[in-house]
Amino acid sequence: MDDTTSADRALRLIRQGRTLRWEGDFQNARQLLTALGRRTRRPRQLNSLLIAMTDYEIRLRRAPDVYQACLEAYGPPDGERLIPLRELLGVIGAHQLRKRGIYLPALDTRIHPHYGVFAPTRSEYVALLANEPLPPAEVAFDIGTGTGVLAAVLVHKGIRTVIATDNNPRAVECARETLGTRAQVIEADLFPPGRADLIVCNPPWVPGRPMTVLDTAVYDEDSRMLRGFLHGVRDHLNPGGEAWLILSDLAELLELRSRAELLDEFQAAGLEVVGRSSAAPTHRKARNDETTYLWRLRPSEAAPFVEEA
Image (cartoon, rainbow, N blue to C red):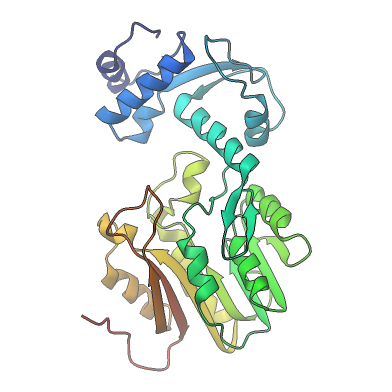
């Protein structure tokens, strides 16, 4: 494929099951991808436009220098590879974001997310935790810590012992960079050993299958992490402890999960809602009707939670 290829022709070929190796101008490839994005929203189809690299060098007109960005994402160069342009643009964007960082007012500092780790560009979920009064807590866990930003908030709020976990080695490295010696970061699938007075979790918000490394920060296939957290957290709470779940209602707006199903999941896990706070996201990519919630949960002892009208 080259600069003479129209978006309609490219899409016809992709729908026939073909992948397209781009040989024209790099910036024109970006324009073609944008045009394809107006015609289809299917990630698999959008990932069919490929760019060739040799040791992270792109030999196309007007191609950017992507060596450092690819080094951070993929490790040492290994010769020639074909990469979806959509993925490559994500790699470039992640490198630029890591370089400049994201300023978080709640911490008065910058967080530098690594590639493949959820970036706190939507800072309302950080503010939710920062503004919520803490229960009495000496020990707190942050499950699925990502950049370590929520663990940093817990430390900032005065919790003496904070343990953060993630099963993504990239996230573990990033969180250790963020937290330094202020908290312990462990590579683990959900919970660390022991119990805590407060356990916080901000799982991926959308039930769905991730297609790329970047997608794993957004999609939680079969709600695995959400269910794993809810059904395991009782066994890791000290008596009187609380579990705080931070979750957008985006899945509800997309009709992928209903509010009733979420409340039923709480009940099935033996948890009751003892409080809830919310914030409207201000990020430009958020939906106007979207809300992010902080659900305060405890082992069930009372009647089920009933939402106000």
